[in-house]
Image (cartoon, rainbow, N blue to C red; front, side, top):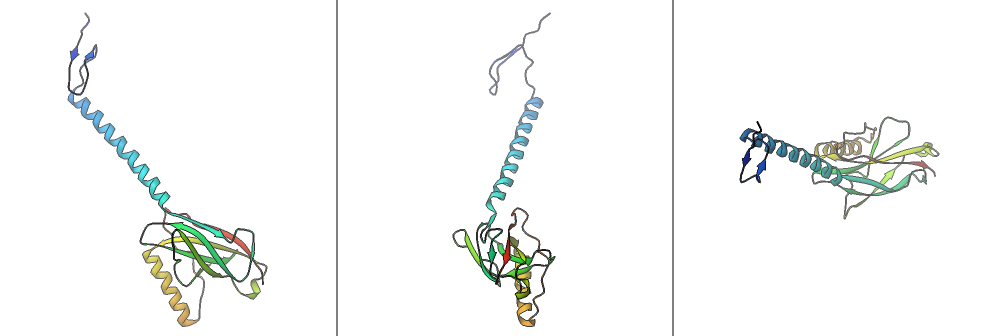
Length: 178
């Protein structure tokens, strides 16, 4: 014997030859759709957050020779409450030196910082320069480092600080000349 079921529902058109969708089945279908929409939305939000934070060093380009004092220029975009810092060190050293005596000022997406690369004895050596975005707490720590260095005359290098996770660190490597 063949059973034929016909149902008319406000959510469905006429369904022939199939069992009607039960309220539980409808609820499961709706919940599945909501979960998928949430996951897609969360993934998109994460991708958009990553796009909101970008840092690039435009000059000096990797591989060029530069003098002890060199202007580092770039572009950046990040959310309020974040700060862009430039650091430099002689390649091969573990410690880094913050540059510019404070966070870089970003105007219309552009920034520049004067970097001092080592001492006279470092002529002919490679230096790495990085630009990184940090949070407010790390910004305060770096400002305190500058204050201590200025007061004591001791500007020991530091470990590269923690950076904001969604922002990649921009880097360039240059050779120091006289």
